[in-house]
Length: 103
Length: 319
Image (cartoon, rainbow over all chains, first blue to last red; front, side, top):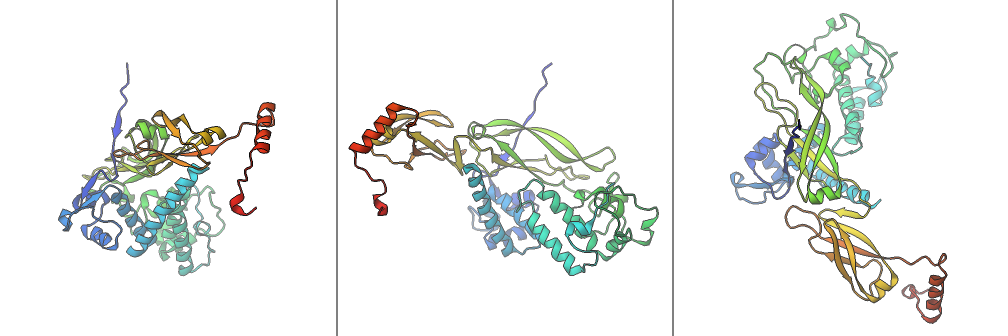
């Protein structure tokens, strides 16, 4: 008997997958206020839409928001501190990736 | 059960005050935070420090813990004395923050399981309480070829799962995950419902997979672009030539223009990664000489060039 292999597909969190503010809240377990604060701080930027209910975000914003929430909770950094840390972490990760493939 | 030396974990003495304990914890938390530190043991050390801090920052838990005395060693087999809890009132909850599902058996036996899962000792069997399961993060390492072509990878993960008593335990899980064609390094794939189990009516959490590429013997990915160092003979670079170049999608023809120098970068459009509008492949020329010492013919040729062809590659350096 052939055993079926179940292959699961997810969604790639890139710029081709977009989310509303409401979807982001549920996915990141964040309040709309918390995400609005992050928009104000420049941690994420709506890709489209003027008012919060029209805002459209891209997939990479999901893990930026989750990262900001974790940094605030685990390390007690405030929002501007989280914003700075995220930029530095992303830059560091990019450099580490390049270095790794250069070796 | 193994004894945990919370003072040793935080690197403080048993006489340390609350300020020192807090400083030591914050320092370790920053150092080992899994978003900051990608070492494989960082997450473990981060959780361990969180557990130690949870006990040592709370005067009541600290006092209870200190009652065991200073003679215990980290990792030593340990049994709490009977009735040792009766002087304290923290059982079954009252923890402040931290992620209790990751605390050790040692912590759980001494202090209970916190307020995340209500019920005696945190077992969530008969309750109307609902909570969505925890989101999990994991990394999946794939080859560049799999990223370019798309693939199915088998993943083996240790994930939290509810056992028959309704208790959350760690369990091995096998998943076959579809990696879509053109994914780039650092992107995440969200697998809905593949995270930790929910309690009550709360659904499962999600699993977020970060894609990492195994280093490749030829190609170097930089975001959506692919870099390749291409060896060419000196005459190919000098005279120009149409040659075959490997790409992730197979061999392609490329024309090297005459007078090309080492380090020259040439672009093969659309031969990189990306789900839509793929990046490019950059070919960087590397001039390779035929070995001269082993081959008398090659040696004679180079000597002829040296004598008949005046050329100073360092003229721009004033030497």
